[in-house]
Length: 456
Image (tube, rainbow, N blue to C red):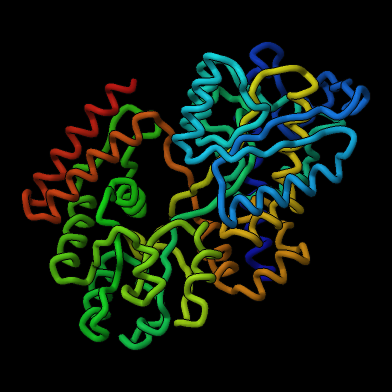
């Protein structure tokens, strides 16, 4: 383990946690004032007096969207949990398809009944359920002397992870909890880069443009593969590396008509025209079969990459290029969270106990080892399972060290999808040559502004 990195990360966690603690002051369950997690106010909260299992085990449903290796990880965690809490809690995990499928089923249940006790949710989903007054604020659980989290447990959570559970739109409350976390990173074929005279992807986008052209010229292979579908979300993240907020933090405006956006879009256009960027339906297939030197995508696919690449070529994972040399690196933080739906006190408590378990080192190490997601806690690295997994799969540890510490969530808004659609349309017009870069970004700005206003 990188001890120096671990110490600096711990300091970041403490700073992040303290900032969150200072920002608290909302209410719990919409009524009683709640102290910030980990503060002295914790002892002032009314202790939870329920005893789970007193009248037989409490059975709860857990709805999620994960299949294949991700679903296997869920099953393993649920199995371990049910063993540890035998006689007290029984969790039944239910796969519900995609996030859209899950959201549709929950919306139907909001109207007709049959809600699960726990479900995965993005921040936008959580806001929707919060607006419907159907989910439970978690602060009273977090602060509880018996069922809550100790200060050292809060400090163990990685930077940025707690922030996702307490975004500003949650009105100072903790409305969701830890599931899985991943980031946007750069997968690269070491063999192809070495053939072109490079060790790793370039550090800035300006340098990357030159590097990509050189790789394509010297290897005959496109330097980067991008989806031939919508790239608006990807572009939004890349723009953030320039220090630009594509969506204002207060949701007052969007910002896609600026010199940085024009520069970035021009780079993309140039690389596509010179065949240094390959547009494909399945980017992972192109990269893992050596038909592109690099792929930008979620680090959650590292386990899948290991399985698909095997020994075809040597590869690595690092942070995406940045807008400026020497600036503080940034990339996108992804992944679902979990929420508790209102039901009975016993089921709500059982749901919290399960969610708390899911976010702690044992479960997080199972999840990280099985998948490409990052563990939410620092101490997960010290579990024998994850130490061996990272030793056997150095790309996963590389992603954990080089990408995850720089991952930050972006502004959460229900308008994000239509905003990104507007940017995607602008990029498609640029790539196809239908519009000049500057004109296309002006139109994207106008369309994204309209989309934002429609959701305010």
